[in-house]
Image 1: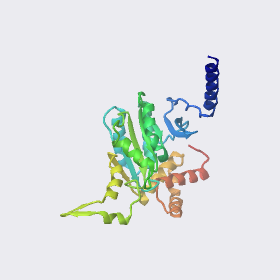
Image 2: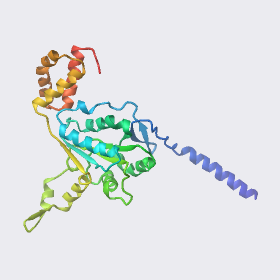
Image 3: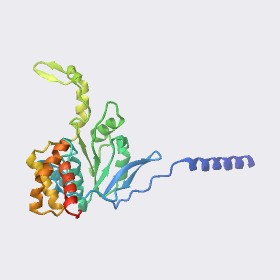
Length: 289
């Protein structure tokens, strides 16, 4: 009996030492937060609250009216408990793709919408995130910004499985909104066209192309974004300058500098327009938004 007692005491001591080496459990999510970021610490993932989410409004986004209307409709359906689609936003850089996702959170947060930002390297943890929100009353958008994959990345298979390949499926309270500069989320090579097969008068893509298309097809709503022309760019500059408190005459006087700004950056994008407005307003006015 004494030997058994000594053995149990040694085993308990050993377990105590092992527990001290293990990482602490992830803290419980702060469900009061409007937005979270999935982060890994000590090998464990958890939801970290975003203390100051970007408060951009839908009305601040100009030149993308059709894309704005479609994602707004999809999100309204979602927060109302009706069917809605996962959304893939692709196209030119700086045209408002990620800002549009942040704007719908700002628009519908009061109706129970929440946002969880997940880096592509952490997409393998999506089943854990699904388990965390399973019992919540809020409705969640998983947000993946600048999503693209190289061949054989683990997140690629995990995302395919969660979207439309797993036996468990996605809960009704969860959607995925992703932005990318690539329409099919993976690089495409000329050699892949040689895999195409001709069957009668029809052309059938090869297996490599089919594999790449299969992921983007799991998004029910595709929104494409294109570079702005000069008039759209100047209109966005004018909007942000007005937001920073500049008068009509001051905005008109900024037109030439706005064009020079775009020329030096080789980009007439919404991002460039916003950056110019911040610079110009900071020089002529000391008001900050």
